[in-house]
Image (cartoon, rainbow, N blue to C red; front, side):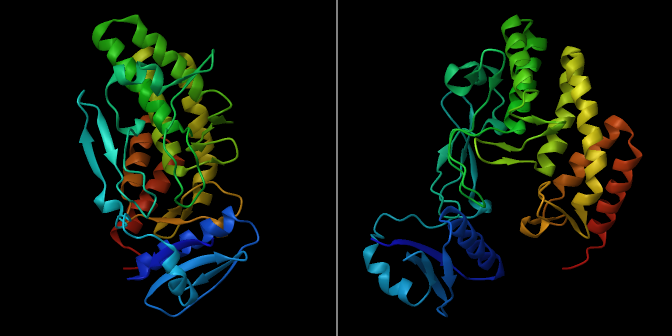
Amino acid sequence: MDEIFYIRYLNSSNLLKGEAMINYIMDRWKGVSYTHGNAIRHGFVIRNRTIVIGGDAMTASTTVNNKNEEEETDWDDIEYLRDANNNTMVDYKNLYDLNIGKVYNPNFVDNADWFLDSSNYEDHVDYYLIPYNYNWYFYSDISAPWYGCEAQSKAMLVTAKKYNETGDSKYLEFSKKVFNGLNSPVLNQDGWLLGVATENNNVKILNSQLFCVANLMTYYEYTGEERALTLFKKGVDVLEKNINDLSVDCGTYYSLSKDKSKDKIVSHQKHPEYMKMLERLYLMTGSNTLKKTLDKWQHDYKFPCYS
């Protein structure tokens, strides 16, 4: 039976979502081609390794059971909830038809004891890894478990802070093992801390580097761990060498990729948090390179190149 997907082209934003889904399908099924139809409400069907958009895809929709389909949701529909133990859960709902629903995203968990639960970390003897235990098929094909420096550094900080508050050594020992994971080849590529790490898909994401490198300085302040300070300096050095290449008018590239034509541009207008993260890192370092970049980003935010 043909595999059928639907794209709703209601405005230019949704058009981009549709193109992203097409790119995802074409990447997942190598050699797939596609053709366009003209209907306002499009679908596409993989038939003989060809994606047909509109027309035949709508006719073929009789093979799909729509009774239990959830309406597609957007980023603005995401909700943050609390479980019975007051741990944060993220309800992604049916974000872009990904059907993720309610999950624990470690980036948003503030309970040290949640991280210490053996179901929420992986023991690799010399280090711990904090997994994302859900699939992520938006702009990528990432199956659980996958890893990233943001979850790793969040667990590292939350447990180190808990040690400072309680004096209980189990939190310090845990945070050290998590730091070891952040410093391991799984997540550390010559000072660039990976935003996504899987068996076949490692991504050097700009906002993840900004966030995770700054967290290393906070961890050093909590614990006095000299290795954290060394990694912090290396991470800053890597940023200084690459940040100009990652900056464009009114935004930045999303990641440090070899093929910029395939990378997406992140607008300063839509994501001002990038400027806040860069400012945080600049205030920690006093780096002239980071200051020049911050000044440019802030100028582009105030006087955008496009509406």
